Image 1 (cartoon, helix red, strand yellow):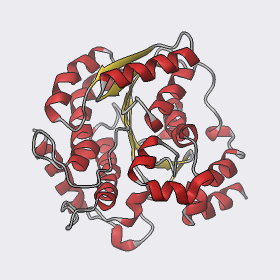
Image 2 (cartoon, rainbow, N blue to C red):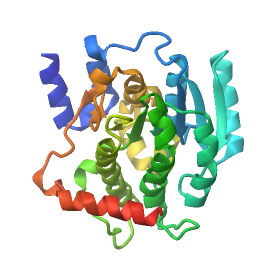
Image 3 (cartoon, rainbow, N blue to C red):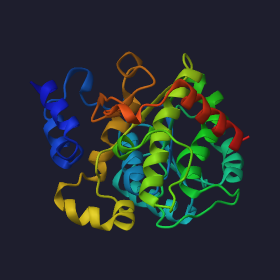
Image 4 (tube, rainbow, N blue to C red):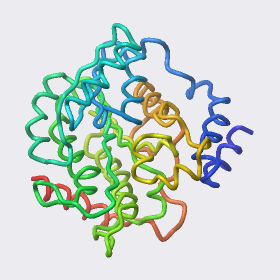
Length: 310
């Protein structure tokens, strides 16, 4: 019964992605889906990009509550320190650190990677995200959404694959259910539309996570996760109309971050690798045939990401 309800919630989108979907599903979590044991991440080190607010900060908090030492990897070090201080007051004794890195700037990723590698991370959460109203480019000339969601995370994964693999680490890409409306494609929307660019790059993230799972199989587990519709500062600033429309149906940031936190602590035989998760269950990557990509499409994405980050 729970499984059937879960599937209905997933396929009908709005109920499943809202707070109602989270509450309905979480009431039945047990067994493999049960909450991680206290201290499940003790002795582990996690890196969370975009960890200074919204879903990122909620993820940091959830990981710290399970005993992980967590690095808030942020573009603005001052805001990151403020977020760390607020969270430290809520979680006395938590090991929280701030590392500056603008993941949209590939030079900054290369600069920060040795610092992050020295932390000997076990978990890397690609959470940083943007939804610009107009087209913007980075210092390297890349479109900002592509650089933030795809190129920077791809490069950071490459640079940290060694230390992540030392103790059987895990990489999580925080994607979006919005990617279901898009097929894999490399061109930008014309005229430029931030929402479409966001959804296309989120599709790229899900495909890349699967490719990285294959690349790192046996050393590092790699997954994509989508949080549902969560009430965060990023949503309020980027899609204010959407936020007002859903209002109390939006999930809290903690509910949105729940699956990433749970998956960080899930045993390897439960999590596996190369899956797309929502509310503690693997989900299909496609619901309609016209969004499916071919093996050649996936190979082209990998080649493009490698070329642009070399």
